[in-house]
Each structure stands twice: as C-alpha cells, then as structure tokens.
Image (cartoon, each protein chain N blue to C red):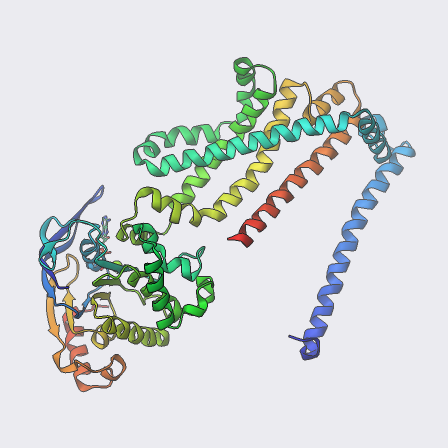
Length: 252
Length: 267
Ligand SMILES: Nc1ncnc2c1ncn2[C@@H]1O[C@H](COP(=O)(O)OP(=O)(O)O)[C@@H](O)[C@H]1O
Ligand SMILES: [Mg+2]
C-alpha cells in the first residue's frame, strides 16, 4: 500500500490560542517501503501520525492511502504507540487479541493467525504471562504482534522505542525492522533518533521546528539490502548522519 | 533457595528480623493487656468511677446479657444491614454517575461545581432533612449513608477515569473503539486500584453514616444503643456497643480486603 501526504497543514485551536503544528507537508511513502520521519520534539510528528491514523483531520490538504483519502480509523492502518502501552491487567494472549476484540473479529481463524505470529516471534510460551514479566524487547515484539493481529497493510510507529535503554533499543529496532520487511508492510516510523532512522529506513523525511515543514527527503538507495546493524558501520551512514544533523539545526 | 545455600550474614539477618517481629508482637499484646488490667484495677480500687468509665469486667457482663436477651444480634444485625445496603448503593451509584461524567463532557463541566460543594458539605447536616422527607426509619439512615459516601466516590472515580494514559486512549481510537468499548476494555480495568481504594474508604464512611443516622433516628442498632446508654447513664452499655462497633467495622474491612485479594488472584 502506498501513501501520499499532499500539502497537509494542521493548526490546533486551544483556549490559549492557535498552535500551528504542520505547514504544507508533502511526501510519499511507496508500497512496502520503510519511511522515517525525524524532527525536533514538538514539531508535529505525532500530529502527522494522528492524521494518517484518521484521528485528526488536517485543515488543508489530504492524506491518501492507495489513492483513497483517509477519513477515519481503518483496519488497513495499524498503530504502534509511544512506549508499548500493553495493558497490564491483560495476559500477553489477551493483549494481542485486543484489536480483533474491538473490531468484532475474534474468530477461530483470527486466533490461529495470532497464535502463529506469537510462535514465529518466540512469544507463544509467554501467552499467559503478564506484560510486566517480559523484557523490554519482548514487550515491544508483543506490541508489534498486537498491531499485526488485524493484518494492516500500513504500520505507523510513534517513537515506539523511546523508553528503552540504548542496547535494548539497538536490538529491538533491528528485530522490528526485520519483521516488518518480512511481512511486506509499508511502515512510517517517527523518531528523534537520527541513527535509528538511518539504520531502519528506505527513506527519511526531515521536519523543521514547529510548524513542521519538510526540510529534506533522503532516499537511502545505497544502503538498501544492508541490515540495520551493518548499516551503522558504513561510511554512507556517517555522511548521512552529519547531513541530517545539519538539517535539524540543533541548538543547545 | 535452599536452607543450606543461605550465607551466615543472611541467616543472622533473618534471625534478627524474626526476633524483632516477636518483640513487637509481645509488646503489642502487653500494651493491650496492661491497659485492660490497669483499667479494671483502677475501677476496683476506686481510683476511677466505674459508673462513668465502666470497666472491662462490666463490659463483658453487659455483652453476655445482651447476648442472652438476643439484643446483641438484633442491634448488630440492624447496623450491619444498614451499612451493607448504604455502602452498596452509595458505591454503585457513585461509580455509575462517575461513568456518566466521563461519558459526557457537558455533564461533567456543568455538574463539577455542584459536586465540589456537595462533597465539601458536612453530610450530617442533611440528616434532619432526610427524616422530614423520608421518615424516621431505616430509609433515612440509609439515605444518610449514601449521602456520606456517594460524592467522594464520584469525585475519586472520575479523577481516576480522567487519569487514564492519553497514549492508551489514542491507541484504542486507532483501533476504531467505540466509547463503550474504551470504557469496558481500558478505562474501567485501568482503575481497579482506584475502585478498591474507594471501596475501602466507603466501608469506613458507611459506618459513620449509619451511626450518625441511628443517633438521629434512634430505634435500633449500635448507634441507638450508644445514645440510649448515654441517656440512661448506662456507660457499660455504651462501652460494650462501641466495642461491638469496632469489631464489626474491622470484620467488614477484612472482608473487603479478602474480596480484593480474591479478585486479583482471579484476574
Ligand atoms: N490535541 C492537541 N491540542 C492542541 N495542541 C496540540 C495537540 N496535540 C499536539 N499539540 C501541539 O502541537 C505541536 C506538535 O505536537 P506533536 O505532534 O505531539 O509533536 P511531536 O510528536 O513532534 O513531539 C506541539 O506544540 C503540541 O503542543
Ligand atoms: Mg510525539
């Protein structure tokens, strides 16, 4: 599934005044590609994902999924929230079935499919455990399976690894990137971690400070087919890192 | 870890812990027994006037009498019944109203100041009003009990509902969850702790409501015995009733805690 973000602008109305979050944002996400959005915090990244998830409606422009405007939440788009947001009061099994339950699609077929996902990604033995009994990486995989349970064509990931420590984060992002590629999903990842974006993506969109506008779009053609871990050692990685760093214009 | 695997330092630590616990228990019991003994002794020696402060032996004799006449079970039963009914109605209606407030932003915005005022109001002031409106009987006592617990319940539960992680709400939205689904699958289960805290507080509040109500209505119950006893200057009866009240309240509190533990084991 491919996505077009077409001249999207978004201003929030609040009692204190207007907050312009996004201004004229344009880029596209090809079918089965992995696109990262990097930008300083507060620049409208989550807003953009909310628009893609059909939760917010832009004041101007539109987002299209396979040519069709997105008007509300749809099963074709799966969402992975900030931190994993597993429900502590549910077992792993009941967590991953949350989507099917809500969608009224908790059939034997669906459960079989979810069971297969759990065993494929080494979580089946933990199906009756509480989320708190799992490691950070396993929780993240569980959150991914919960999203994959409805078989969306598109995955939206909103800084899903931000709560993890550095080493877990490296391992988990590699793991998640592999699963997403394997399943042939189109993915949009929001992050403020430049290295993470370069290691996982086919394309990187750099947003400016609020109101978010597209600063640059990088196609990572020369890194294609290289695993996330290996990418970090290449010269192209360094060059790109420096370039994006400049574009982000970080002032301290 | 097996017994043999314990290091000497660990053993010494556990030993010290155990000794400390035993010492605390002994001191606790000694304190109680000492207090009762001193009270009894002071009464017998005439240091204090037993007609005013009663004495342990007299309290026990009174309890035995109440038991024989069947009055003990009657009054205890009446108070427990009122407490259970008042507690259940107050807690349930409070939760339902809190759900309503969560459901409707308009309702919560409109009602908020009223709830704050009603919560701040000393509910005992409403007692005479209930008696005039619903009569001097059990119904008024139950109304009093509900009044005392319902507003705190609403405010606490509603605050809990509003405290649900925004990111979790956003996630439910992306699944296309309806408001009812969000309530059942996220907001209510996320507030189990709030619920049990509220219930614990309400057990205590319900007893306050019942005793206050019985003071005013005075027909039966432990509150009635206390008031009656003080009016006829039978302090033995007053002390015996207070003791019964303490036991009943503790028992109910323990029941709630067991229920909570059971619930947590089952889910
Ligand atoms: N629901 C909302 N109402 C009002 N302002 C909002 C809302 N959501 C986000 N904002 C504001 O919009 C801007 C962009 O927010 P967000 O998209 O969360 O940024 P990011 O995810 O890049 O950190 C911020 O200034 C934020 O305060
Ligand atoms: Mg964000």
